Length: 158
Image (spheres, rainbow, N blue to C red):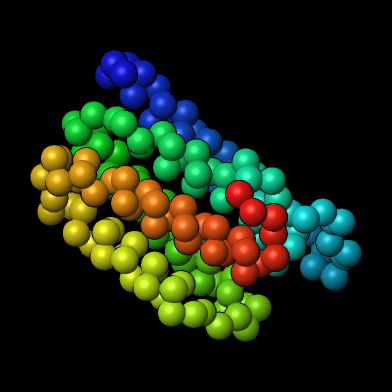
């Protein structure tokens, strides 16, 4: 993959993220007492978390994880701050939703979240080679957490 392709992917990914945040803010000012739309996307208070695998935060995160697969070490270094922020935001959103629904976590959930947080903490100090070696297992952990969350929320499997 050439440098231009990587930059194009990163720009598209950033644009997609901005669009998601912009659309999330479109509902502000609506009547909170109004009936919610009759879709799976509104389930659990997190638009997109219960929809099709390609929708909302879950779909965006899966697309992001696929976009970092196989990129060069230099590109990995460049996109690392954005990646760390996206994963941290995902964890915060999942924790908020679970807390709002009074859902308890289990040992597997806690261990996976702890492992992902450890990844995020150690990534900035890693060499490009170490970072590239970590990414397959990091991706597996993020994907596993997304699947656990979907399952806990009662959504269809990925």
